[in-house]
Length: 307
Ligand SMILES: NCc1[nH]cc(CCC(=O)O)c1CC(=O)O
View 1 (cartoon, rainbow, N blue to C red):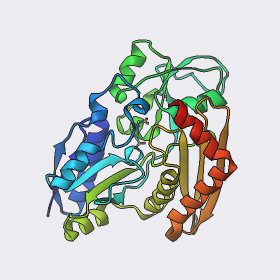
View 2: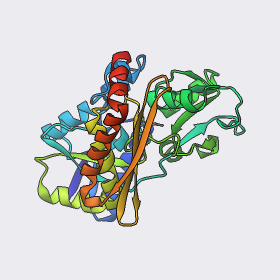
View 3: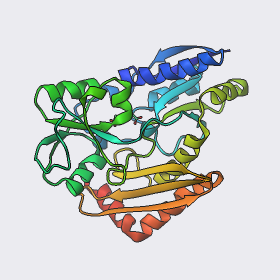
């Protein structure tokens, strides 16, 4: 069996696609990569929040899934919108990498807890809001582009440090630049961070779907991501809304922590619910209802009005 894998062409996207290739190859499947450019790769002068987050890194891949020119599309789970079109679905989530955000700098002595002021480059509304909340002494500058572009801007002196997902930094082998791992209890990651999602059209032949799923899907991660994504979906948050969520597999249960933070960092809500993995999506929905009831609905309205 031969699988055509659609992927973006950034180094991180290629690492992810090649990771999937290795998993397929270990099970005796051959595959090829089809490189596809998305709007998010082309438009680099505007913030993601302004482009509109919906499908900005995924639309062109989804078009080719429908056309059948690729069998599967590989995405960072974090970049995949929480509601997929009816004719597409996620068929697998890979085992999750460490989920935390890390502080990346040429100066390994930098620390967010030391109280020393410095400048961080990030374009993530979640990270900006959390920095304002937990680290008001830190100045934040907007910084887009792929990892390599951001590191170049760091070296040009546009900032002293970046705030990034450990998963991407590690996969690109920049571990030497990690000055600090941030605690997930405060800097709760974005939904899906650290896992790779495989998307397919419902027209994908069943034998291919089953083979890909058997070789790449990690069930505990899948249950966690279902809970997180249901939470995000209920809040209708794309990746540009500062909603966060992290589920872990705890004994027999999935434990889901999720919340929302206002853009200026002044208001933050975060709660934890647990339940059986078979009801992961209900768990996400229940937590979302709870957060909305606590005042999350008002925070969400003001975020939408200000993005
Ligand atoms: N939004 C961009 C993006 N999508 C996935 C990752 C990192 C790897 C991952 O979490 O899967 C990143 C960069 C970052 O946030 O640092």
